[in-house]
Image 1 (cartoon, rainbow, N blue to C red):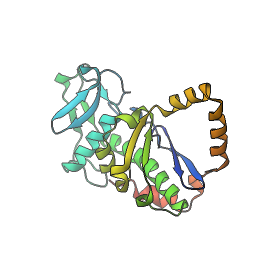
Image 2: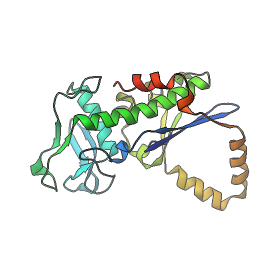
Image 3: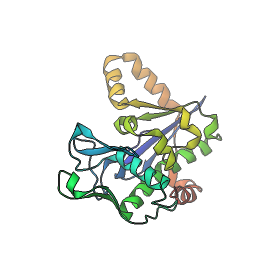
Image 4: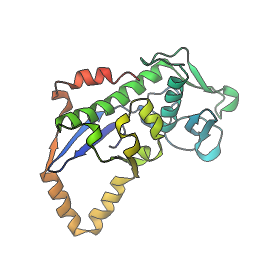
Length: 224
């Protein structure tokens, strides 16, 4: 699973690989979030009862994807937001006196809706793949998270908001920059080309929009 603007998912079974792409939108990359930003210096990257962490140990100037997941999970835990995603009020993460911009860093109702759309797209894609394979999450050995974002998110909070399946909570393994690793292997190993070709031969692309259950899955996975 690679979580980004486009979420790429692949389910590896004994004799085939099912894959799909989900249009998650850019929320987890900081776009379309009122105080969102990329995972660079000044971004709130983690949040919880003990406070928040900022990349570069600087005064905060916004929220990146990993921090956004933590904040939404915290709002849910503290009942500042209900399971339908309705906020009691805009939530101030950092008051204006504590930011580098002089403006408060907050989470708004529109921000929550963007998170719902993004996490529902990923979760729905995963559920459709498992269904197409005639399996359940309990039957899977592991869930590998690819990409920089997957390497830094709080897995417990990602499960809490429904981004990652609860059944896989103790089987989730972040792998980091797998595309970079793959590029290096492709450059250094002739045998790697043969491996890729053998994988492609048993790979089946699933078009989510054509699955009769996708619309219902997407609607239901909007809930927290």
